[in-house]
Length: 220
Image (cartoon, rainbow, N blue to C red; front, side, top):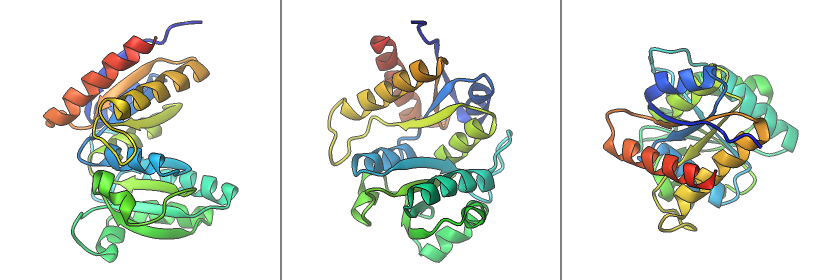
């Protein structure tokens, strides 16, 4: 079995380059997108996605409408609802929806039903709504943009990872779970792995991405 090549990079531009190179891309946005989505997976979410909010202007292409369509088609095929996660953290559902109209348009095109709109609060988000069996989309300004950029650039798979604890994972368990997902997906697809610190200005993201990269290397 070929051992995947493992790299680490930063920002949406790094995510796009990794996606264009055909890698499985791991988005690390500790505060809070990837932590929110890790907690959602713990609660039994069917699938999780990231999307760029409407006002995002990264230096690479993003397509939140396409993300909405992709997630929406999955939800329709599985007969489940969509849960949207957005910003501002403190604000109304109306405010959050106003910032993700492109993603919502994609969902509508797919015929998917939005069940809830939640704030991006990390592990606390899962306490606000029953997420088992739902498809989540986090339309956020850092992790969501990086996820969107990687998928839009052609990544065969984009996942998320965190080192922050969730209701069901403590200590190193969240990071180990992300590393295992990355290795399993890369072996399944026969690709390399790129771990992306969603913001090069966030020490938390960079240190967490380095740690997850090391754990991936230990599993190879």
